[in-house]
Image 1 (cartoon, rainbow, N blue to C red):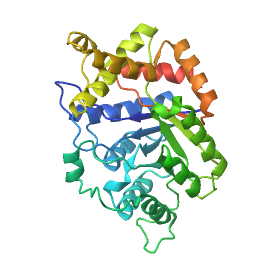
Image 2: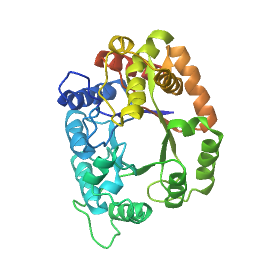
Image 3: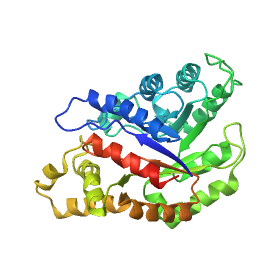
Image 4: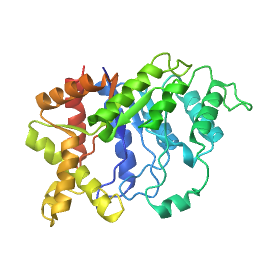
Length: 323
């Protein structure tokens, strides 16, 4: 099974936000050395806990520091952009780093209403996502009404970050998919993945259906240590549901010293239970179960830890587990 990383350029409380970006670049360099197949970066806007709002800019910097690992977006949020602009950005990346660029596309809007307003989203406007996605596909294929430049000899494969209806769209357009979150643990989600494979129509972006599962994976010497390393991300997610703001990562000891409500405790524990965190043997067992349930072709780990050394150590152990 292919093994990839999704890096969200997480910021740390009390540290310069720029470290979230330089940390992503350093992690990509190490991922290439370890033999990972792909390294993807995220797009989030006006989120205190995430430094990356522009995947193409960050991918250009990572490409300059690496030589062969595939690089991609996880993903570009198409409702925030015009298809022609996205096509031009990723064709430029392909021209600079030939044969290494992937374009992952999502449809999430801004994290809060003020952010959505700043991005000029019209809540009452028509849903043009599928039409925009098809237009983008033709621009990358070079058979649209206008030609996106630079024209390259290679191609930029597209992948859809999909749940529910997104899987249906991906099947119709012949696109690979990345599936994450609770859908991986629900029968309805498994049914949707099966329907995607059944209804898939081959295209230039995919001759066969391809399912990548994405989830938090943290590996350490033992289960208790791994769960503690995964705590800052689970805490941030739980706090975001209380405050409407996704915060920077805090140290586990600082989190433990705070007062936890019953509801917050339940949310943190639920988030930790959905993540895959444990010793190498525990993580291998849980991943085997997930792959068996979903038939996944690829695993994309979206791990975050407070200390970067712990993150790199987890990446190294995961690479040893999945060969």
